[in-house]
Image 1 (cartoon, rainbow, N blue to C red):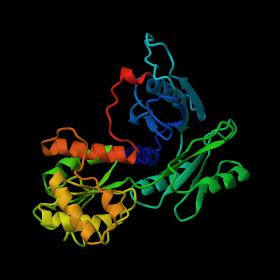
Image 2: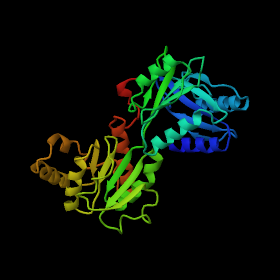
Image 3: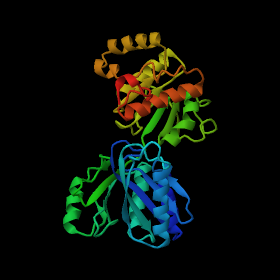
Image 4: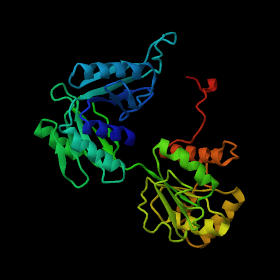
Amino acid sequence: MKELYQEALRLLDRDEPFSLATVIRTQGSTPRKPGSMMLIRENGDIVGSLGGGCVEGDVWAAATGMLKRKEPAALVRYHLNEPVTSPHGMICGGSMEFLVEPILSSGEFLPIARAILNAIEGGDPVSVATRISEIGIGKKLAWLGDGSRSGTLGDPVLDEEAMGRMSGTERFVTPLLETDYFIKTHVAHPMILFLGGGHIAKATESFAKPLGFRFTVVDDRPLFANRDRFLETENVLVRDFESALDDIPLTAESSIVVATRGHQYDDVALEAAIRTPAKYVGLVSSRRKWLLLRRKLLERGLPENRVGEIHAPIGLDLGSRSPEEIALSILGEIVAFRNGRKGKPLKYDPGLGT
């Protein structure tokens, strides 16, 4: 999403038109869920994705055509329930509805786009209500993190109703059939913080950004925590593990991975990690090492329920050996945890029926 809004602002600054396509409703099995977005440039290039395949291609065609004809925003609907033999591949079984918005000038969208990008990069959350009724379709009202607002839905009553539904936390409010607008909230990309700058941290760095994570590394050795070693990392900090997290703005959305160089450092780093609000805390370790550390943490009086939440040994069971395979295992577990899943295979089991 960050790249999409960076490109939107670049085009707005150059007075180049583009289209935005947003998934606003889905039902059943679909390749993307509400809130997914794609930007389509005037030359047909895209940023973002609506799931690929024929649906994305059809939305792309509609968006480029509307942009060329300078048409107003419109809703586009697709049913993905064609027969398996269909040449179009729309066989997921669900349905999708999109809002396609040609952005022909900066107008009211420019300050909203700037606020959204600022939120994604770590600023205050921004909620944006977008009208989808026939009258006023595409009009936007933004609730900014400081409590102010920008734009309008074109109706004072709708403006006040939408403002009352903007929490700054719920990511996407799917419109009901009788609702005139949808709400999308933009917040900072979640952080993964590595305590330990070894091989696994280095391997994880290259995967984290494409998955939408901000990445921070802490180590008490300058040789392992420096910009030459971690070129793509947001923050590289040299500090003791005991006080490493004191001034880092961690939230419940943050994930902490403990991967220090030894048992005595893991002990200190783990205690610091579980005192933060981060819901996901994981430890790179063997089962035996974790049992020893767990006993020490409990003997020290740390809450049993919080210690029990630690993911140790960390990661999904992929049989990982190399740092890159271990990084894949760790990120797979973090993504599954954030999505409320267990990381089980999706392979169809005939014994479970349809």
